[in-house]
Amino acid sequence: MRPRLVVRRARLGTPRQSPRSRTQCLRTFTYHTQLTTKSRPNLPFLTIPISNHSVRCFTTERRAWLKHEAKMAVRYTVSFWGILACVGVIYWFYNEEQLERDFPTPHEWGFITRKLFRDANKGRYPKDGVVNWAEAMELSRGCVLRLEDPKVDGQGVTKLSDIVDPDALIPGEFNACDISSKSEEWRRGYFEAIMLAAKSAEHTDGWVRDITRNVISPPEFVIGPSNPRPVPIPPGQPHAPREENCEIAYPGADNFYMKILATKGFTARQKLEAALEYASFMEFKERAEGPEALYNLALAEATQGLDMSNPPYNLKTFVLNEKTGPPSLNLLDAITAIATQKARSGDIAAALPIYLSLLKARRFLQNEPPRSARQPAPAKSLWSQLVSTVAQPDYPPPPPDGTQPPWRSPEERCQEASLSLWIGEILYASSSHDDGLSWTRDSVDIAEEQLRSLGPASNDKDAKKTCRECLAAGLDNWGKMVVNLAKEEERRRDTGRSSVFSFWSSNQSVEGRWNVEDAVVKERVRRTKELLDDIKKENPGLAGYFKA
Picture 1: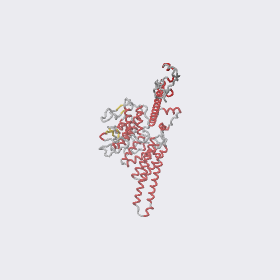
Picture 2: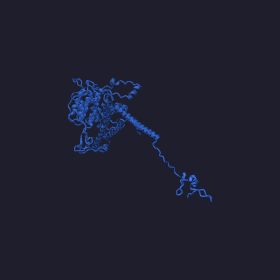
Picture 3: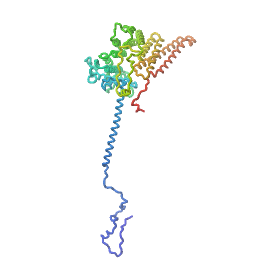
Picture 4: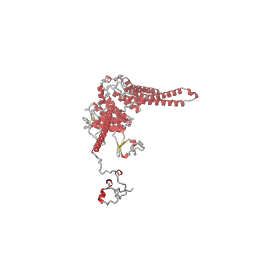
């Protein structure tokens, strides 16, 4: 609609007024109206209000709020990661405490040396059963080196020789030492560390290191002329190394054993154990001359300090002399190792009398422990028990030195069962099958009885290990003997069948006897499975709270 100009109508006959006076008569709200425009009227209720002044986004209040939020974010982030780090540190120290109780270390050693020894034992005795010999070798070797370093934990340890092997990776590593000035706990821990390194070196004998990738590998995986048929690499492992890129990774076990035998400060018992382990390793490597000399050395350590004018054994046949009284633990172990070596070499005629004399001597030992072992532990108060759970555990007392006769403990009774087992093998292979079976049954009965008497709650690991090995070997021998006898009787029945009435002969009853005994053996294996597996409910510890 076209805008109109609202004016007052002029009367007829009235004279024309001047423009100035006419303008003053216009209404105020139409004064600025543009008459020539064709757009919409510019009315207040039709226009959008436009603000000409700018708005401040970063005010003082907003700055204070952002500063508060930043402080809270930093505080929550630091608190979260701090709590997580504290939980991780507590869990780490808890695991170290558990390892210390499982594998005690001398308190005189430094923290790093003790940790190396604990981790080496953890690799040697893992909970999942997969032994990491390479890790045990490296850690135990590093522990021994720290114990011999005067700047670390070897104060007072002197080298008996200054000769350096030019081929050795670490100069003077295998030089014998004099540790007489150290305490008994220090010397015992040092011996255990070297023995662990020697045992690990046995299992890593011949392992190689790929110098291009720094990867350790067993020799059966190496690709090269010396191994024309390499074993395939397990899935997920680095690819097989090549022979031209490899070098020997670890020193031989001979170096560690020779070092123990030449070190000054070890007991006769410790040197005897090292000599027997070294002899067993040389037998495994099929070295003809070494084992016999080492067995003689072990026997010399066992008889150290005895009056050899009336020797406790026959110097030619090694049969024990009953008139000299009960033999010592060292002598029993040395003579047993010699008899086993003779049996393995095929000289069963010489081994059988030694075994019989050993079994007779062990059965005449005392049935009660000595008074020192029978003393009960003092009762602890509630406060002492609480402190013992937090404080580091005491280092175990020293084991027997082997110079006294042992008593018939569960471990010694399982040693008797092992002797019966070996006697049964010899009799079965040489003279009488029935006698061999009888001795084997007796060994199985004794080993099972001792394992059940120990129970799952017993902490005597050595006794359990000895009895478990004896029981497993006894059941295996018993089953093989019965199967062989059943096959022999079946062949004899087939060759001796001459008439239709031979079905009713006595051979059929004999065959039925071996089948029945075979079923008895299988039932015995099933019944003792829990003893052989040593099923124990493990304590998950703190990790159990984070598992579904």
